[in-house]
Length: 182
Image (tube, rainbow, N blue to C red):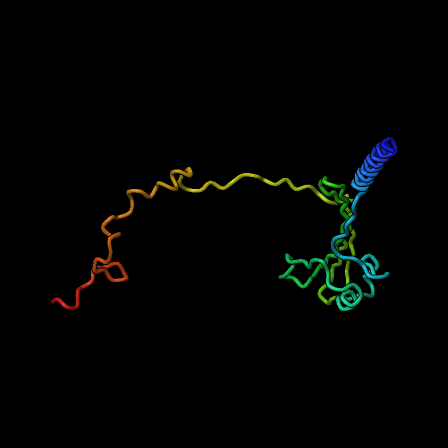
């Protein structure tokens, strides 16, 4: 009987070890699958921004078919020409790695003064440009204080005569006159 019990314990440990290894391998394999996320404008049905016709469409028809754009041009406020941008992108992410943009579509619809579509332009990820950011900092006046200087820096600067109580001063800081004395 003891031999069977011992074999059963070993069999149970072996089963748990195999199960935990299979679970670990399963988790590792699912971490390798990319997660795709779509951001921005998602076309409903067959009404896509690319199908806008410059000959027949107006602001009203584009707004009715596609809805509000992702962005409207802001630099053309002084002129009557208006441009609407419909943008979407697909980002791919693997487990803990930084997400990468796999696909990007931008459709620019330009309207003339009458609200008629004058031009439809499409841009993809290959049309993008990298912008180098500057990491310079604007200097401030003065110097940086250490933690100890910040904590103990006010010792000796506080006027001791004002700590004791009221010295017949008005709220404005001037010396007051005692109403009982002339």
